[in-house]
Length: 224
Image (cartoon, rainbow, N blue to C red; front, side, top):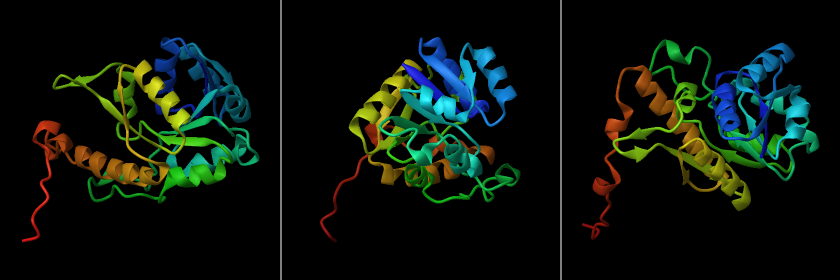
């Protein structure tokens, strides 16, 4: 599959390199042509500008700093339909500036419902929220298991075919896709990322707050 990557930072490298290793054709399109070319050479991908990356992909990843995502998409021609009819993977978390300075209190969202705003800007694209709960270092590490279970990637999107495409790309990285509802639920994934990552940066094991499936149950009460 041809995958266009809008962005040339850590997430673009982590996911783009994994897909290149899995045999996909990847093109990096950055706001800086030099940075895009440097990353592309490092991971065995092609490079181009933002519009070229948008046109290249049968699926497209947008991996740009949260407050610059919408501008990057406009520069890639998304408002003119350059991504129409294709999956657009949104992995971004719009942290407020300096979020990492005073965890967990400083971890808040600068933009509400970013994935839905992306869908509004990227006319006709099938937006799927994915890969936003963990830092690039985890995605760069390849297949991951914790306590004998493959690491899961929640997906939120409205188009069944786009979800299936992104699920397959998740599996290509040795991870497990988790269908988590429509795009309107992506705002909960974004809020969850802010909360959980804030706990990690504060030194807490966020996973300890959730029991395994076998012990997670809800029994309806009788109204008493």
